[in-house]
Length: 259
Image (cartoon, rainbow, N blue to C red):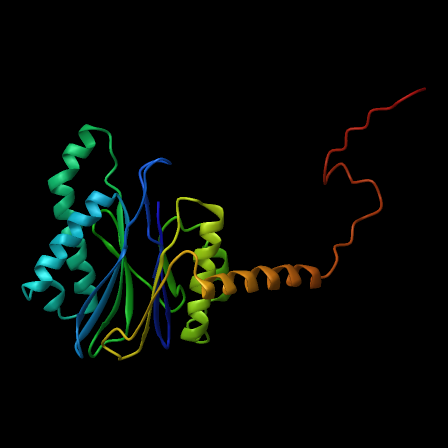
């Protein structure tokens, strides 16, 4: 299992991923799921992966080979075409390995997040599904997730706003989202890879890997736990009806004693 997310605001992008790969509780490994492809001053791509590790490695190997030969992500004319480029490799590996996986009842499970910018366009994030088709992150839906997404989504739904959230705030939302997921699912774990990209930088300037333990990550966790408990204490108290519940609102079973 894994958890990766991409946040988009009017100021730029935040991309983050965990690094845990497991094939059962007795086979847990660390595997980086963030891959960067950069043509300085021209284009930046950050690719996050989830799903079957063998498949994602094969897809990434093809993307890397194409990139280093000056093709693929190097030459696409717009970001939609870049997402389609990733999708093409997803389909090619599906055609190559899919029939053999189906024979052994193994699901072809991969997903990618592609974030970054091509000069002359706004920064973008796309999700690429196992079928190779892309989905774009929008202003009204300013984040995308892959992998174990349910635990880390509520804080993003409540907090991320395209026009209001600064990159510094988005970083904190990303860390809390990942930490919430790690708290609730042991198959997601550190190190955490984090990349912050401001509009029109066209290079990677801010990257951080949080290992376990990490003093700064621990401080954020402790502060969030403390402030969350304080917020609960400050919420209005709930008033309860002193009368017995109406049968239309809830069923009460009473066992008469004596008499």
